[in-house]
Length: 344
Image (tube, rainbow, N blue to C red; front, side, top):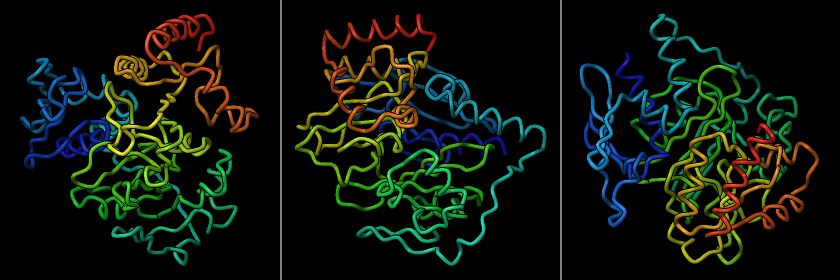
């Protein structure tokens, strides 16, 4: 089963990998997340996942990196690596059972959710659930705006929902909050499932074949106004005209329709995270505008909301602490020094 586990986590990592795709059953490739691959040719992808003796390994023919899947996960996605280790140990010890949350009273509310040419079945709107339902109660505890919760769904069987997006994905049946991702035309091209259990992966992201990085709320954003880009969908729901990307990586290519927009990247306030630090540095090198806080104790936008701030105050703070070029580099250096002093 180890080869199945490896392949499962390659698929879970894939939304963070530029131009990822399976070439055949045991070979996949992408632009290298370690070196960024070719600077001149954005279509070159010289990072490869390959199977050998029942395990998957990674090799880049640009920078020469060669390692196990576990080692790659540790470098590019520590959160996934932690979950990988847990599942690997469960498999090693012969314990693959993951306790979930049993839900009741939602079957009658399951519906077909259509977005133009795409549709999801076996889901229900969060706002159609009873106030005491664990999925709705969880989102309300995070103080998500009601109109944003109306765009989220719940399912008893996320494995079935995932297969509707990508037939190659095989996941167990489990309850999850479903966050849909759309293209510019409003078609569903991916989903993210948020677990309501303390066990297993907190987030699982599935994307349709032929699509690279997913952006939440892309179909509703106004390209003529300032666009805020957050790490996760929940944070974006507190900001006006915001989108969210899935995962952090050294390079980010925005969708074509945003190429002439005023974009501000709002990453989590985690200066100890190698992923976020590398991403911010990459964005600054690319000439992007980035939000770099000054002595902010909250980890992300949701924490700011929960501490009593409102969206207007947060937007004002972000605008006052957004930088580009040399100013961004100086703010970045100060941010790292301040984080050490304040123990963030």
